[in-house]
Length: 415
Image (tube, rainbow, N blue to C red; front, side, top):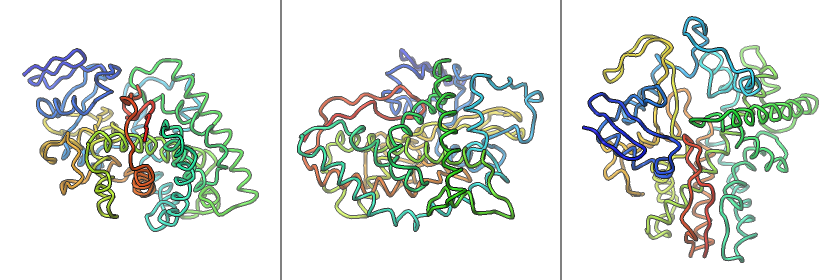
């Protein structure tokens, strides 16, 4: 079966796909493409990316937990053995910032770092932040409520996650706008078909970000405070303290992951809810319905679409043979739309009682910030719709060209 669109060609027999990820018809509405992939070719070789991709829920869920695959490979093999190119000279600062990232490392280093950080992110700890999040959200709405209109990302969605994660780590709140700039440049490295300019911007942001975090570490060493950074600096794990390089990588990944995806998700969720035509008040009538509404927006409008893994040994999945050093990609957002798991998967149905979404991943790399992100969404979404009950879209939202992140350029609303 061959399926042809301007930006998509599926050869189901060969299990190969040609897809232009920078085509607005794709990244503007990736769910429609995922539906076609599920119908014809849920496991496929993406020609442009030169890699195998999995979209089936059970495959993605299993691969996220499969210890035969890892986020890194150079801890068990050399570049020469695997035929990998040398690191790029002009992204050395970015590579240094990523070297000890929780997202990129495997046990035992991952276990040590995650153990030190995890306590701050468990549900019972982040629950204490509820009054702060509510106060912040109310204060932001107070600023624009009388205007009858707003661009929600800049006036609301951008501010809440970065403020909360900065407070948690111990970064001054007035650094929020600068953190956003660094983060946006930094994640340019994850774009498909990124340009050299994107790489240089990401490297520059990584250097400035690291230099800044290094200065805050020095302050906290001299004068600890009641924040996560001080905790990471002064707490040992099996007789070991984190090095400065580990502290910098961990702080950068927490700041980036702690707000980039949640900003996108607030925008995606508001859009999904407004376009659904459902009675908004019924979606947030109590804690349980609010939670179900939030999880359904995470399922159908996930902010992070792809996670990659290295095969650490020869392995066969769904009839595809992988050798050690092969890279595979898991499309979390597509797994959330698998018709085997979800009835009418492209429809927003908050009363679903089906499989849990995979938007935060699974296994040892399950998103450490998931409890905080969920708390923020469960507080700010109902609050926004309660304060502005006549909320509606002022114009068709435009999706950012940053696949495999999925978020809006802007979200103009009126009431």
